[in-house]
Structures are given as structure tokens and as C-alpha cells.
Amino acid sequence: MRAVIASSPGGPEVLVVTDRPDPLPGPDEVLVRVAAAGVNFIDTYRRSGAYAMPFPHVVGSEGAGVVQAVGADVARFAPGDRVAWAQAPGSYAELVVVRERELLAVPDGVDDRAAAALPLQGLTAHYLATASYRVAPGSAVLVHAAAGGVGLLLTQLAVARGGRVLATVGAAHKEDLARAAGASDVIRYDELTDLPSELPAAVRELTGGRGVDAVYDGVGRTTFDASLASLARRGTLVLFGAASGPVPPVDPQRLNAAGSVFLTRPTLGDHVATRDELEWRADELFAAVADGSLDVRVGATYPLADAADAHRALEARATTGKVLLLP
Image 1 (cartoon, rainbow, N blue to C red):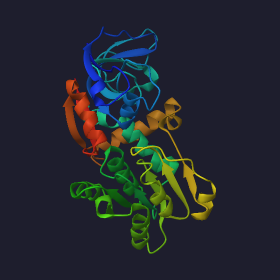
Image 2: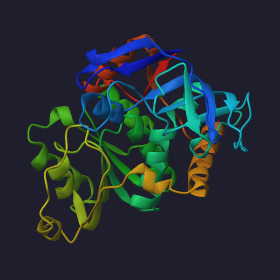
Image 3: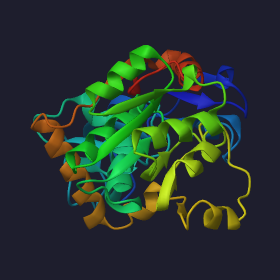
């Protein structure tokens, strides 16, 4: 099979397509032919060496495809089943082995590209809106990078739960996407000269001086101070990513000064820790896609051989929605 490996820590140029032996499933594993693989920021962190990884390694962890073979102990899946997954190392490949407990059954009405685009970012958006801060009718929330993969899904889920979404984006075409997803107001990064002061001022102007009940911040270093200053009293800052770099250590007294606010740094694994929770979240997402109430935007697709270009586009903030690799 062909697969994309990161040969050593570094930039996108370390990604190389190579031929590797076809993998075989273990007793509790499933062999899947990949129809599409998701490209995510965590892939760039692992490629660069920011997250500890062995080198060389096959990149990627998300995708969708068709079951080719199953291990002796597998009970839920059979050859020919359509499946998707969020956490299977080595997904930038023509074939991947996935543990049975990580696999999701893809229903009719959800095509391969939507199925590959949804697991990681969809499950993330779902736990953000239902657990990290539970959006309810009347909630006002700020969603950073609202035209990105998580942002577009999170905006739709928050609005569906009765929330008002204030969105931040970096360009006019991204503003259009955020509004189409349901954002009531959009603030443009590219129109601000001093983000830490001007963004909170804009948020408070839009909320009658109150601020928002929650900020969903997957950007990190460049937005953190502005996010904290945008919260209403006893609001919640959900820091779920670091696309601009990690946030420096935070003095807890800052939370006091900001209005007795809450700060949380969640991760997906803790919100799909049981099979029941994984299936509940996935079933809600797939059902919403199938009935047309949740739109999954695939912003760009690249052939497997162009994985380096996909990483360059993602890191340059040149993408909207989901980026996929097609083997």
C-alpha cells in the first residue's frame, strides 16, 4: 500500500509518500480500505515534533472507508461495512488498521467525504456544545475561527441548541461562511489592530456590555487574552486547541479579576471514554447530517501524494471547513 510518512521532525517537506507492506488486523482490530483521510492540526503538531512521536511514522488519525477484513474477536463489523474513525494512527494511507472500539458505523445518507470529515471535528464540536459549556436557549457564546472545521460545526450545533453565536474570522469569504452557519454577528480579525483590547470591546458592544457566557478558543496564544476579557461574570473560557501556539502559564488570580470566570482545557478522549458515549455523540452527528440539519463543509481535497501541500494550506490558515486526503 501507499502511505504518507513523516521521515523526521520538521516542516511539511518531511512528508513523503512511500510503499509499505499491507497491514494485518489483530484479534480486536479491523482492516479498512481508506476512502478519505481527515487532515487536522494535531497531525501538524506530531509531524513537527511539537507532540512526541516516533520517527518515521505514518501520519494521520482520522478517516472513512470500507471494511476489508476483521480480527477473530471482532463482533460489531464485517467486510463491506462502511465505517469512520477519529483516532487511528496511520490514516494517511490506502489501508489502515483500526481498533474495533474506535470504529463508527456510517449510516446511509452520509457519503464518504462527509463521513471522513466529521469524526474528529464533529465529536469535538459536540462535546464543546454539550459538556464543556452546555449551550442552552438564551446563551451567548463566542466561537473563534468560526469558518474552520470545528468552528462551522460548533456554530451550527450551538444555534440548534438555542444559543446566539458571535463569531471571529479572518477574511470576508470566511465571514459569509460563518453567517451561513448561523452566527448572528461576525468580528473580523483582519479589521482589528489591537486584538486584546478591540475584540472584547466589540463583544461587549454586541452584548449590551455584558460579555458572553462562554468563549470557545481553539486558536490559543494570540486570542487567549482577548477571550478572557470577553467573558461575562462567571463565564467559561473553553481552550480546546493551540493553532497559534501554546498559551503561557496562567495565574489563577486572573480568573478572579475577570469576574470569577472558569477556565477549562478539554480533550476529545475524555469525552468519548466509553463506547456508549462515543456512539451517542456520533449517532447524533450522523443523524443530523443525514436529515440535512447539519452541513459538513469539505473546503479542500488533495491526493495522498500532496499531503505536504495540505499541511501548508492548513498552517497558513488558507482553508475553510475540512481538508481531506483522497488515496
